[in-house]
Amino acid sequence: MTDTIGQVGRDDSLKELAPKLVHEARNILNAMRAQLALLKKKVASNAQGIERHTATLDRLIVDLDSLFHSFLTYARPNRSTLQPVDVCQIASEVLDFVSLDLQQSRVEVVQDISPDVPPVRADRDRLRSVLLNLVLNAKQAMPDGGRLTVRIRPACDEGVLVEVQDTGQGMKKEIQEKIFEPFFSTKPGGTGLGLAIVRQAVDEMGGRIEVQSEEGRGTIFRLWLPVAGQVMTQAAEQPANR
Ligand SMILES: Nc1ncnc2c1ncn2[C@@H]1O[C@H](COP(=O)(O)OP(=O)(O)OP(=O)(O)O)[C@@H](O)[C@H]1O
Ligand SMILES: [Mg+2]
Image (cartoon, rainbow, N blue to C red; front, side, top):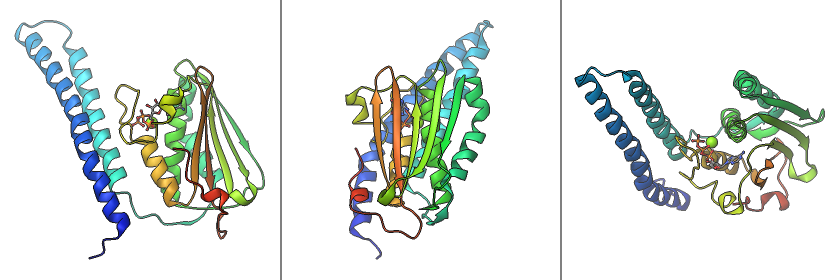
């Protein structure tokens, strides 16, 4: 048996999450059944407007797939391979990847990258997914456009500080307290697993994450990552702002 206390704790929390996953999946399935009933009626009476229902069904199938995919990422994350990683390069790659999407959403991007950022100790793929989740959340918080700023700089004995800031809708305190909980979402079609995956990855990389937000003004996520080959100080080992 290779079970550790951590593994037992993890299995317990997965048991608690299973009913929530089923609940979310059933909501989507119920919505699909309702669309199918409308579709059947229209087909039977040769009515117009069938495409609207097939498009909604398509979207709901994507939502269900994304729910299962995110849940598996959360429940069974790949083993981290921690190695020296250039976080500035990963941030640029992520911003390139979503640049068209950001442009279409009228989001201006500002990259404020310090020239002397050391390599961090991270898992490359998981760090990419952390930054992508933060950037996508920032974009979604600015439906009418705005400014996304990514700042990266050394933070003395706290490793490297990465900030992802938006000028979007911001969050009330009550919302901020729940955002890292699995399945917490205020978005239609959101799985609410994005930030749970982010926090899990950051914890496993030995970093920490905090949020600062003001309703109507915007949000900053601050992420501290350990420098490759250095041990984080006590200050950096405080629990994340949860
Ligand atoms: N930059 C942000 N500005 C405002 N609210 C945010 C921001 N980032 C996260 N949130 C809030 O935190 C909630 C949880 O975010 P999370 O990324 O975990 O899930 P989601 O974005 O709702 O769904 P998914 O990531 O699966 O698409 C969001 O629904 C939103 O209410
Ligand atoms: Mg998200």
